[in-house]
Image (cartoon, rainbow, N blue to C red):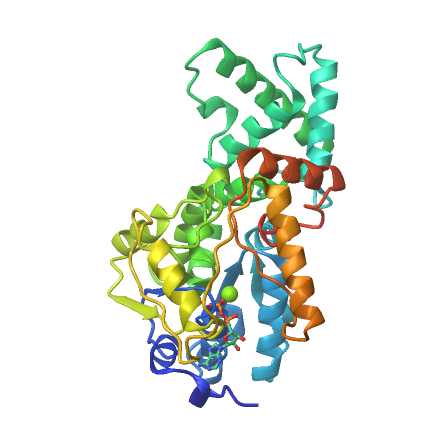
Length: 382
Ligand SMILES: Nc1ncnc2c1ncn2[C@@H]1O[C@H](COP(=O)(O)OP(=O)(O)O)[C@@H](O)[C@H]1O
Ligand SMILES: [Mg+2]
């Protein structure tokens, strides 16, 4: 089993073989971020710098976590299944099951996906005879999750006005109901796990001593609470390896905080910043256009993508009047390319759709219960 370090470009190799120190790997799409992170884990273990139990690696989707495990299995003689590699939610779930008593939960606590959570809120709103026109279950749910993602319990919310006070009362009642029923929603997994570590010094010290290497993929998508959770786990000794693309943050509307990258550099006094700028997915014309666009992003840490793959086809710009027309045009184009055997889907369409379309789609997803099984999908990958 080989790590194939010879297949890495010089920047990738430098990132993979860093010693025990905090590092920020700034990289664009298709520049090998996930490959670097996975290879580094294997390199650390193979070279005896850390045992498999001393690694914690976190990603955003179950798909990414599975991919990481598969790639690791191919590089390591150990079964990575027992390792702490997973999504924030998955790892928090694991921690809460292991320490359920300290966390104040029954061992068999149930996880509510967002559909289940909405159902729980609806029951509560009915039971309390709340005016649903003024406080719709969906808004209540949104309020609760937003506060939890900020790390705030009902008692911590600043009661600036009457409406906030009513929402906050419902938040408190909802938490009581969940506690009674042994139910934990997604946001609660993280908040409860954070509180467990924050309050329980023995546990915190235990994990901080254990995890010598903490690796985070898609760091630009972490929210404030996730960042604080990572900080507790890193303690004074853990080396944090954060891989992210400040130009690709797409979760701002639900609390992702690109500012975490700058905070990380400052809070951890990061000395090593490595940029991965060689792209392996696209031709030059596409990258030039992307570079020109992202140059307008505010608050960026800066990088410039390039490729060895040649210029490729010139770009065409098509401006559609509506999102539906845009989708239809795209399908026709793909169909034509497939017919000419020039193209092998899948297509990657990255867009920030108009607000109404985005909400419709999220709504549709909620109905389908698409967040089942601790899955977090990127809203623009469908
Ligand atoms: N040094 C390299 N040489 C050749 N291909 C590479 C190299 N690094 C990455 N790739 C390829 O580029 C693609 C993107 O890699 P990935 O790790 O998924 O990138 P990211 O996480 O940055 O999007 C993959 O197909 C990967 O195999
Ligand atoms: Mg990746």
